[in-house]
Length: 303
Length: 252
View (cartoon, each protein chain N blue to C red):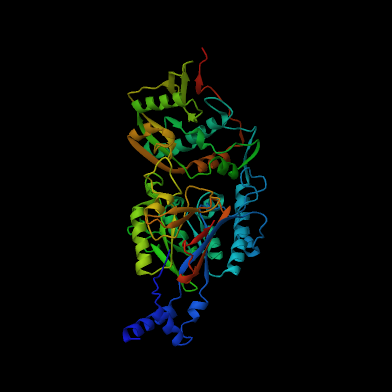
């Protein structure tokens, strides 16, 4: 996961000392921490489940999620908050207000970006478009081509965030809509192959944007055991390179901890998903240091 | 030190002063449960409150009364709750379909799995309709050839499940073969086409109902099943559905 090649020549190091303190600051204070927080498939679950709920009693709730996030941000301001889609549909909040409250609350919680899930089309492209003014965060989708729809120019394939000098590239991927969403809802939205797009995106983010960290925000689903041809987060992780973290959704998979997958270059990729309904919050901390502090085994992953 | 090296050093210095070292050396990941051990943020809670109160007021206003508790598990090939839902769809959708096409719905077929909750004894509200039908499924009408109606009957005979039907009557013999099938009390003519009301999930092959793919025409009513239920509850004082003889199997 080496992001930058440093020429470690003895002559260069000696010369640095000879030139005095100039430039040494960047070496001594180089320890940095980036925190990635994430949700998926919240499905309009704004209120917590009640104490009588058969499955998830007393769990979830946006006002509680807000306090958890506030605490983490106080600890580390260099935090990104992301959502992997299916914000809409699941409680009367959506039926009555069409997603207005969901977007307003996510804006109050200072979400940085979200990708688009299949249920976010439930009120059609017009229904999604109508709620955009309530969202103070970006919608990121690289493999839905909205050119011939009302959503044109209202999503970005990727976004680069800079936190404490660290460049974080985030790109979004959505699931195939045909057969899953009524054509009247997604209209002329074109679904592009997520694996090909992921390869393009990771190349752009690494080579052109020079990102230090590359995150894929995916609504493809965690894994399809009985349909291995269907793109999933696990298959995507194995088929691509340069992606550090895949944040998933769609399959409502409650992972106890992130999964570690080897990518096409044999490097580790983290795949995480936090089930659904705002019951869990994913938290991934990336610690950065200068190249010389890297352990001989590479990156240590504690999950 | 030659000039070449000096340039290299200066270049490195420049690169480093505007770009700090950026190698990941450690990653920690965990998923944190959100539960009642966490405090709530009051401003968020206060922001939600008026939305919640408005919804609850509307959802909980009483529309009708149920004389008993009804579950889709109560019955073999037809249930009181399923019969109610299928009959409601017929009653509410047929006038709309007739107005648009000049034709009448012949019968209704829904799916047993589409009934998402029980109806409890006592007051019925919009919330009841949301619980019964939380999804956004809508009513569609298929113009279905007789041959496919035959497949539909075979499907129901095989499934032996109380898929809700209305205006359709099916009798199975003790071996599970269809021995009688009527629409509006008239024997089905498999050379005719029939207008079958169902939902947009089943028309696309949901629950393996592949016979709908041969529909000659599909009419989208833009009418959600939940709204049909709400419309029915609003004009009904008391509901008292029963399991009847619309889908039965003979013992002898």
